[in-house]
Length: 323
Image 1 (cartoon, one colour):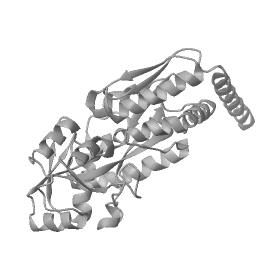
Image 2 (cartoon, rainbow, N blue to C red):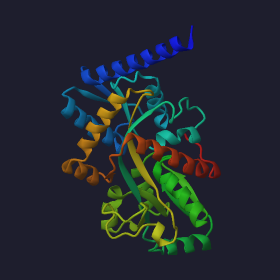
Image 3 (spheres, rainbow, N blue to C red):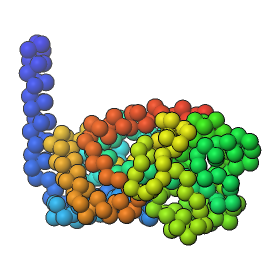
Image 4 (cartoon, rainbow, N blue to C red):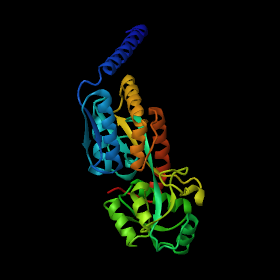
């Protein structure tokens, strides 16, 4: 076969794929959509349900939230990676989904190659809180105390490899302090131990600790976002308080299976972003402890690569292994 014939065949194939993608985008959706996500409860599930609500209202089709809690995201990731890229299977997860290959050995998907990023929905920073018996009120005082008492401070977290666990490990590395991580089955269990002084500090979602701070059972010290946020009013950032460059947040995003046609990707991004940018929806996310981001697909892909490069070293150096 001549080079000309091969070129024509390649061009025709490309046109057929594009035409099929456009047709699919025009007819989409004509049946229920499934959003695969983590276990019920928590920020991941909340984000999935808010996205499902928006797509249901926009498309007039039922959007089903399919909770899959196995392996800290492994089950959700594998199901998404193997699904057809037809827009009827989506996934909502935190940045833990793209860190799993560094945390566990039994991960059989590549977060970059096996997902189509649609949009980063929101970002939820942590508040650094301490038991009131700890004689510190600022980050600098905490660092000084930790250096004077190496290995005597325990920080609680609600799961290995989660946002508040990684925040503690990053703080240890950047501040040059020796603190001991203590894992609990959930954040509420960790709060209970923190308030009874079984552990001394924790990085936690701002809204979840706010009532305990107001009651005086916990003391808020700083927030982990790059800039000050209304999610933790009046608190300085950790970065401005003695640990320059410190920034940690749980990032909640929407993905599709690999090789999703561009028309479908464009439409889903457009509709999801428009929905979460509505003032009443932004307020709901804010009340749940998250700021709306509503990124493009390209921005989410870039965030993933930066985040993976950053955390891979922290995870390796701290010898963190998932459950």
